[in-house]
Image (tube, rainbow, N blue to C red):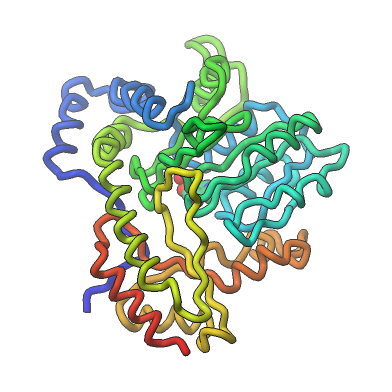
Length: 374
Ligand SMILES: *Cc1c(COP(=O)(O)O)cnc(C)c1O
C-alpha cells in the first residue's frame, strides 16, 4: 500500500511556476526585495486583511524579529504556552527573554486567558499567545489583559493563514491582532513559499523597521543601525508564494471536504474526541487533531499511531512532547504547572490533512480508527 503521510505540500503546476520564475533569469535579481517579493507583499496584505507586512525567510525569524522590534527589556518575562511548536519558545529564549508558561484551554488548545493574569509579575514585558490548529485565541480578552497591564502582544499565527474572526460583526484577518502577528509559510503550512514567513504590523513604521532588521540592520550603503541577522525571503520563494496564493482558496475548500468527512465518520466513536468547530471563524482546516481516551477507546494514543502506520497512514503526535518536557527545557520548567497542556499532549494525534487527500481517503482512515476501538 502506498503510504499516506500526515501532510503534503501544496504546489502549483510546474508550468505555472516556470512562467513565474522566468523573469528572474533575465533580471538576475534573485533576492533583496526583488519584484516578485514586493508583489507577494502587496498580495498578502490584501489576502490576509492586514495593514502592513514584511516578509521573512521563515516563521521562526519572523518571531525573533518581532521580539527585537519591540525592544523588550533583556531578561523580561514573556507569557506563553508550552503547547506549541518549539520555535515559539526558542524565539523568546534566543532573544534574551524568559518564557513563563500559562496553561491552555481544553476547548481549543490555546492559552487560557484565566491563567494569564496570575503569571504577571513586575518583570513581565509581553504575551506571546499561539493560535493552534487553525483555532484563534481569545484575542479580545488577551488584548484587554495586555492593555490593563501595559504589555505587548505578539501572536504566533503560524497555524492560522487565511483564518478570519467575526469581531464585533466584521471579519478580521488573524494577522491583524495584537502589536504584531507572525506567520510561517513553511512547506507544511496551509500556504507555503517553500520556506518563508511574515511579520504583520499595525503601522508602516513597524513594517519598515522589520524590513531593516531582516537585512542586518542595514539602512543604506553607509548606515547600519541595528545588530540583527539576515532573514530575507528570496525571489524563488516569493514566486512559489505567488503561484500558491492563486490556489489557496480552493486548497482550503478541499481541506474542508477532508475535515467534513472526518467529522462525519468520527463523530460518535467512543473515546475519540474532536475539537468543536468554531462558528465565529472562517476556518482554514490546517490540521485535524483527535484526542484518544485510552480507557474509553480501548487503545492508547501511541498504539493507535502504530496501527495507522501499519495501515499505511502517517499521523503525528503534535504537539508532543510539550515544550517543557523537551531535553533543552525540562530542567528549567515543570510541566505539572500546565496540567491541561500536559494531558492533551499525551492524548493528541493529528491525522492526515492536506488538500489532495480527498474525502474517500479520509473515510478510509476514519474506518481504521473506528474498527480498532471498543
Ligand atoms: C511552523 C511554526 C513555526 C515556525 O515556522 P518556520 O517557518 O518553520 O520557521 C512557529 N510556530 C508555530 C506554531 C509553527 O507551527
